[in-house]
Length: 313
Image (tube, rainbow, N blue to C red; front, top):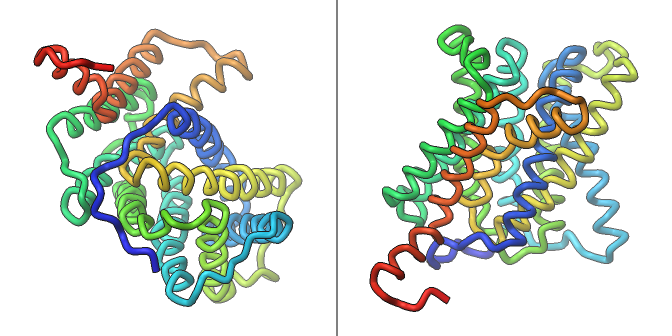
């Protein structure tokens, strides 16, 4: 098994930032798809369809591209661990939570992931939680709150169990980033396929025990299309990109996607649905971008270099 390295935190290059934006669009759609599917099927059944269809599609791609899933027993055991932290726990908790709270509030709670990621990597990893990074995380979280508006925060304090479920999902995502460092030596397609295949195997007995397939209602065409989109777009493709970013930029950086998901949702709504862009949207996006710049650290590095009179090229 590839062991976690002790190298310093990796930085985001232009390619990684572009992939992070793409990932935010793909995962932003999952909140929409979730609402449509969970309205007709229970959460664990939706998770089964999501990871199962995604795993099958990626196994087909692995075969077509000539890659191999013969990576050894230790890595397959690690896939199961990653599946629990990155799929089984957060998918189920978010789906359950979204049955009781609004998607906007769920998105804000999801945006706490970078906070937990920074703390987890500081306590258990090798990425020090500097004041600048913590300030950037706080600015990003404030930006998400501004972006979503006071209405999204209106439900804060009620349905505490559902909100706690979403926060625990964010914590699970943070630990998955730490755990996922061991897959840096694998091709992103293989890592994504292994994780989703393991998740599928684990959830089958849970679904058969809680929600036997023959007892589920026949889904509508809308729910079927949403499930396909959730599996192929927001899961299969998204996790290939996720592992690609983690491989080159590290776990804390890939978790920044949760700040960009609400931005993508707002811009897509404006561009495709003609929804109005309000002043708070621009203010929220500005705060998020400031936070991302602080976390990235390049602005501070250039500023310190100029003050010291050092070359900045």
